[in-house]
View 1: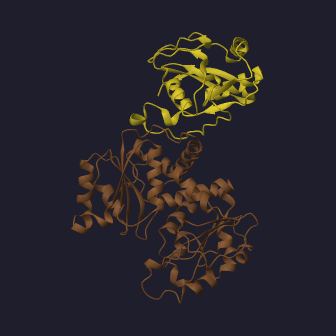
View 2 (view 1 turned 90 degrees about the vertical axis):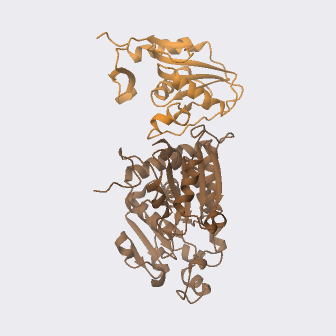
View 3 (view 1 turned 30 degrees about the horizontal axis):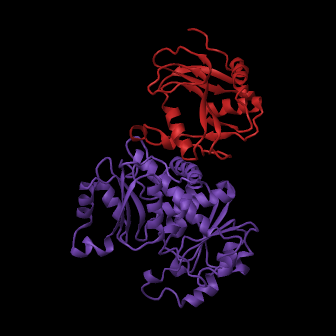
Length: 316
Length: 166
């Protein structure tokens, strides 16, 4: 049997590539460790010495501001040295291969590679090639996975709702292009959320999405009714080639989260969004800035979650 | 095997020794897990005005590169300003001194205390760092290959036990 490429021989997390295939215990270990790091991030001195002397390379083959920045902050709060490479505009344009780029960085004594790539599977390819003391964290690959975003979503849900075992979570919008949705759905089902719903037009749902253990809704009002958590996804204009939607306006009318639709959910429902938001498209400003929104706490928790992931993998 | 001291009997003596230190400025911090149990008891017995602090030194250990991060670090909670305080740092067993070293490093990331005194239930010797306790319940001989641990049973009773070292 082939070993899970994310785990070492002792079953410990060596790379974080996707939430899919991770046992429940490891997900909980990450969430619990992140909880302790939240304490660190609330102090005046927001730094611990765990990764002193280690080098974290942020390899972003695709643009990102929030994810790259929060990884950088997380690594710095662990006392690592951080090197940011915006590879979209460097070696790759000169024709260097992905593995050659990584081999060169490895020769500069890297310990952790944080990788974002437009091609699904790129971080897996890198993880297969790195040395035993090097670790790979997937910061988003193509349409496949974005595990740290999924984990910070899980952390946020647990923070506000305490217990996964009685929740109804609705994920709304462009599931087809969303690596965030995929990672989150795997995490929610692994942690025992009894009802995960996906809501969107047929053209933005992947074929066979039901096999992930979710209920599918095309009617937004029906889908959000009674939900404890609503996760809005960004309408990914830049990924949309061809006519999957009549127009953003029509999408907003049907699947945008307004105060009126939110009122159908539980009175204490929380609203999440991985960012960046298209205000007035998938989410109304009154909701994004309203009392149910936990969109900015998600960003803050993301730092603690990334500290947890980096300190767990770098120690294994 | 010689009998281990009774933890419950050591507690009042330890508390008596601490009484002269108690001022409104004194604060107590217990180290997870055994030290936190002990600190809860001592804090109540002394009636300290400042709320109890609890600390997990997982992020300050010196064996991270060898052992990695331990599985369930607790969240450190220090509900008072460390700056300028006299601190009573409480742990169950003093052995190599490495936990105390880590705890002091973590404490200084919260502020600059005026003083830190170390309070322990049992000293088993074997120090690897220049650290000693100011308040000690008992000195205990531990046979090779064994660990001395504090356990908490039903009704919050504390008990010292020997177990095979991992």
